[in-house]
Image (cartoon, rainbow, N blue to C red):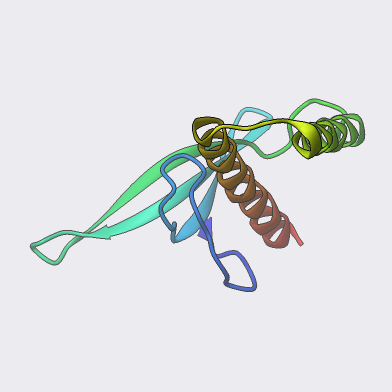
Length: 116
């Protein structure tokens, strides 16, 4: 069931932040859900699969509208950062959120390469 994303690269789980081995697609009714699968080697030499839910493969929203809205929101944040006075706590919070955004975008890109 699981597949490896093409092209290798960093495959970071958006749930736990650790690298994952494959992405698994599970069908429930007419919907398909994605899971990041970690394969962990146990002390006795056996392996265990840990799955983290990523989200639906085809969410029922207008992809074009939501993508444009997301880009606009990011542009607004960038504009705000150009003139805002930021303390270290806020900068650290923004860095944490930016890293999470990058992880999610990598998963989306990896799942797209699986579908092609």
